[in-house]
Length: 488
Ligand code: BG6
Image (cartoon, rainbow, N blue to C red; front, side, top):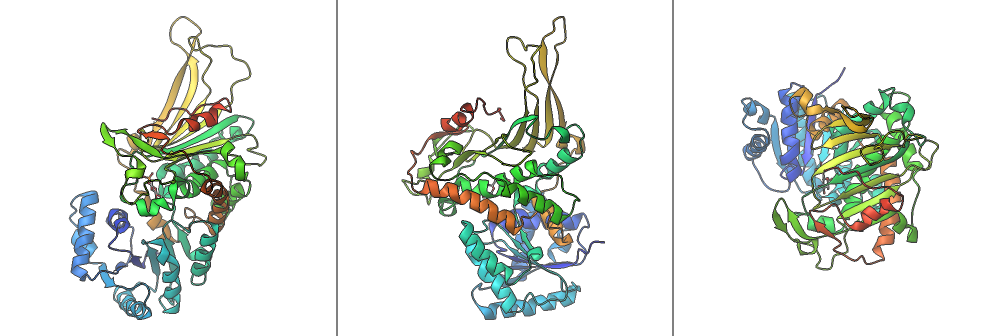
């Protein structure tokens, strides 16, 4: 039985994430009757009345989902508290307020602290929550924490230490919003519920796996953060590595949080570490120059606001990740991700090995290998590429595609990622949040790459906005006798 009764405290309630994602997602849970008793306290520095805050919640729901008739009731659950994150007396005021709301709504002392604000405050807030008594509740307490979780392994460890002095590991919900995506969650089901895939899911039958997550947006207004992050920390350390883990993990014994997360950790433990000069053999970095996107001329990265004119920050990364275990020895996982690319698209292509002998031709060319394509976004679905006889006289083969589209079937959009993640957190299901060990291993892997890059100035910009990245990313696969399957 699930207890969906909770007081949700959102730190950073006037910020972008709260408005764009959290309020609309909470509304959707509310309108599907998935919340029992609940109240939300928005916390931020600015002074606002409850009414003003409720109005901003209302506006964000309307702008995300359109007008709704039960909005008044929904926003009546929202309260606001102006707060100074560095000041104990501010936390004590907040605690008293929270206790009062808890009483009024009979929230059983269940509390979710959602940190949707600048990462430098994560640690200090966690410490204050404990020392000023906010975590001292009779129900459950959970901490939801946005990325980035540290900047490298060392800072992540420090942050984790602070958090763990106030919360147990099982009370910490580290968000990776890719784990809220419907088709990312589908990876496991596709693998472990199909007799035709699982026996082939290894180095005897799979040639390589390609994961592309491309964006058309540039760095927008996030230059200050992005300059210290780059594509490696912003996308690869978390979202891309999580997809690799889900594709590569062994079947869990059971579908429990601990079993699934420990199988993912085992993948990270088998990662081949690359460092020093060797990094160039496995990874490629890029930075966008000017170009055209959607018929609009866009500036180069170095001309974006809050970006250094000679910035050495990568806006693109491609790499070859090797997992040195029995199942995957010899099978590259090629990944690439970047900003200002040709399309907004996240796709996984599993390329099966060629059949032992080729009897058929596809008008003058060799048979295409079988591909399983998992479409994460914007379309959601799977496509299996097969070969079949071309209709008509000859014994020519042609490629046919079996497709399943998620959207077509349900005739509606699948739930927003954040809606599912919030729901999971309220149910106490941490499966689709990252465990500390996953974070630690992926930082250790990424740190070696950033160390190698830090000391060598790159020849940037090296790809045109609106392209699929620098030519070196193509060469990375060409060296192995392969190419990127088109994903756009
Ligand atoms: C975020 C990154 O984690 O993911 C952003 O910080 C990036 O830079 C975003 O744009 C991409 O997410 P999505 O869901 O649009 O693929």
